[in-house]
Amino acid sequence: MNYISFDFETTDTNQSEQLVALLSEQGFEGFEETGNNLKAFIPEESFSETAFNTVNNIFPSLIFAKSIVENINWNQQWEESFEPVVINDFIAIRAGFHLPIPNVQHEIIITPKMSFGTGHHGTTHLMVQQMQNHDFNDKSVLDFGTGTGILAILAEKLGAAKVLAIDNDEWSITNATENILQNSCNKIIIEQHNAIPIVEKYDIILANINLNVITANLLSIASVCKEGGNLLLSGFLKNDEVVMLDSIKKVGFQYIITVQSGEWIAIIAVKL
Image 1: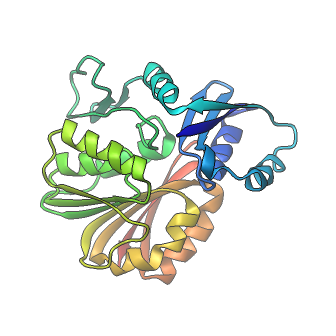
Image 2: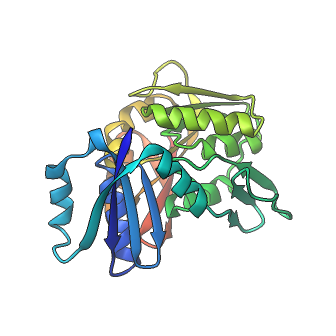
């Protein structure tokens, strides 16, 4: 499977973050940010010129180059550019070809492929930091849109009794399965779904996707969240906060706090 690569010259961090949010909603699966350069990747069959132009029109002076990348070359490029992520003394996220990182409470090893969520992105940082502040001991957890499986893996390391990790993307399921095995996890069930299965309820729900997917699935999220259960959301910008707060209130969640990293935010809520 080939991917289309876009190489953008951005003016600042805010523009990069806005582009990532908008392109994620169109099916772009991988991003690399280096200074004022943003690379974005999408499966060739998922690309829509019309949809892309709606984003391009928002930034009329945006300069970019477009090219086709073979999947195997993309994987090699991703691996070569992947660097370990260390968040305080709480967690280190690295690939198997990196040396172990000392003096952290938890270490996650992932195979850095196309799936969103290597720990580099601001929303993954926000989710990981907020997970540190929650009690996962003996809790049941739903990781909605698991990507690489990082949040599901961390949930188990923090003591979760059971984790259901779901995604609608076959590549993500394959990659997350590899990562779960690589981290010797045995309490994570990973399944491919286009919607949340309404079969049981969870103490904690994690959703790091994007505004449109989360709001479209909030009724299902509310249906599977236990009373008093925690909801951790990210994958959207500060500009989306009002819409998200209004949406979660309508389905029975009480807002707790918003945390921010650059233009990205995470919202914490509890089910009434």
